[in-house]
Image (cartoon, helix red, strand yellow):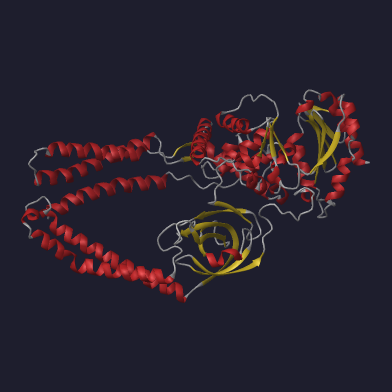
Length: 622
């Protein structure tokens, strides 16, 4: 056997052994498929961020941060206020409550709000990081903290635990021995004048073992545990229950004041599209985008290619294929001649390269053949693309700039030539973005349902027709000024819905400003301001600041609000049932839930809440 073949074979086989074992263990330690438990509204003890990790296949996504932010609002440390029809105008307020018992990632998110707040207020959309490095560092730390909490609860573990790492290190030792043999065989077969072949061989052993051991110990994510699988199954049941109620998905962040922790867990489990769309903690991910195509809300994972055949024109691909084929042919046909000529030079024939001349000729021939086949394949696939275009119908998820070209003028900025077009065609929850030429870029917008003619292999769009204009993405200025979800919240169980404006007007009459001022013994005038938040919301404000919030909800969301808030000290004689807890009081009447909650300026005046709640309930049923 040619010694060069033996040496390269030993090194190649050793690397194949290690990375084959690595790939096998990756496959064996993949988190198992979880079967959801029956739909349930019962919340478990895990925080929303951990529930998000369990519900997304043991991955920490941006949902964990969004859910934790909402959970801080549900627990009274933050307050979300939506002043008008647009949830993007929501502001986050520090309530003045001193956080107690927060874990590491909850403290991190609370501190983020505190750092950005001016006079205790920060616009929700200002939570986005402006520095990419800062965002990555913050996210990396948050991710570690969520994973640490999950592990402490016994719900997840390293994908490659200590036993697997030890096994891989042992395989790395065997592979390093093979690499050392191949290198040492070559070194002693072709000694140099320095006489350091032994040292070089030892160095190869140390370096190869250190490199492979580092790969073996690299973090590869989390995997399931028995307890984690049970918890994940329960949370998937909660997710299915929440998704079964379309109105819940429309709730904005300001709804957390009424729905307590349900909204936070909904965000954690991907069941809240409006709240998730509004909150961006600097981890906005265009690779996970909401879609309504097919009639239900779901998330689609999008891959954005950046090179190769993707987005190229047919002439350019044909030229590339022909060029590769020609170059490959000449390399395969005449590459060995270059080696033969080189071997006729005394310095080359006497060098360490000489034993590898035959192997080098073979490798050059193989490389040329690969280029030739690649070129032929490119030409054939491009011709197929041209002769068999495909029609795709789906919803536009994302449009973003892809490629630009530099203008001939030095003063002119680069000009766009191609855009990414991510489309959900309903065939899978994963897709690859298409290439949209500049000439077609203005023909559609995010949320539109389109029919397009495409070349599937190159992912290039040839024509776009809008089937239906989208209305679900972003704020809609033409929508009436009632709350975005008022109609959903005031739906009657048999399908009818009350007029939103009438429902809002009725809420205003449940309590009068002077009654609130009198009950709170407030020294200055109080005014009532209908707030276009979830359900019927009326904020009572004094010159010193907001003092009271009156909230009502009906139907399914009323039931959910009651379940979230019905705890504390019973209040007999108010509605069908009523409870008081720190800073709030809630009552149930039929399918309606009424809640009065103190705002920061009136903290500590809980004694007034039962009387105000009773008055509001009596007027509601009158």
